[in-house]
Image (cartoon, rainbow, N blue to C red; front, top):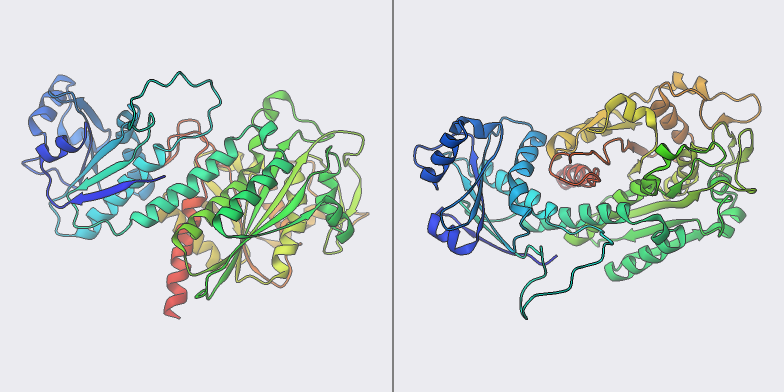
Length: 501
């Protein structure tokens, strides 16, 4: 991603049209009496029996006399960030459908509050850029028919923002887009091209290019270590190429160390409790939690943020076979706790259990884990929001606030000890789960918490919103990279708080 950014404090129709044939016009709060492209807008609205006020609910797009495409929208700063991003996504959609090389964004505001205008400009730039990024498509490409020197089809390379004094947020926007795009790309990669072995090789190459330290514990090492929870899931696959991978980023001025833990099940059949075809479809995306963690690490590294990060990825597949684990097995986890297996399709909490133990033993200041973990979270929230469970009240409040401010909304569920009785086992220290689905998202979090050592501050993110059919918030694709922007916003607050201490 190589974008050339420029800005112009004035908004001039001729300058905009000279720059691009694709124009995004954003009115902040009020509509001015005199506005750019006023006559063309008035004609379009009259023809469609609309008024200017309708732009606050739905963007308006029209073709100008010279053939340029204009999309206009009104953004009220009193709206939630999620609502603002949604309107901007709708507004930019017809422009990006034509795969422009250049995009002009005009921020029209009568307010003297330049912060509002700058924030809206940042949102608009992020929405435009994140939705312009290519995602994995394995169709045959048509024969090239471009002249020398032309950009590739659909490559957005030049953005000019009119109506603002400066672009102080460019590095943050580019980093967030890169992280989100990496997350979506990893998640969308077909399972035959992203087995645990291939995924590990891809991560190793990425670590080399980003100057991260790469460490892994492969299957034989995990067996020798006594990581029985992870091994139980991994043992059913051939080849036995599962591993726990650790990617480490360090900064000389860091005052905090955070751990990001991701569920990386590259394909989930359900094991002996085999999924039906309907529910097995898309199960190569069960590694999305690991993709979120890697996407966040990518964005942190791109900005060279002053924080140390260890990214722990539980990479495996959940297959059926003669060696696969089964109901009523009892296995012993890395922390010595014995686990009674109740359902083989509750494999995510098994691989995360040992990974959380490893991560917490290094005593990070805060630990976040990401996982497409439970169907009951999606039952509770649908696919528009994700759920969190944390063992610190202040961390709950921070994450909920970050969800509001990033437009990636989360709902907090209780981390209440009385749910532990559901996991009582007559033969082992703990049950893996129950046979019922009631409150499984809370019960799963209580299970995971048993494997965290050193009393580490921890938040579990159950990614019920990782995919939403019509796009979600800023992102138009079904798989939307939920969690990257959320975490970056939370981290921004953590670093600000640390700097003041």
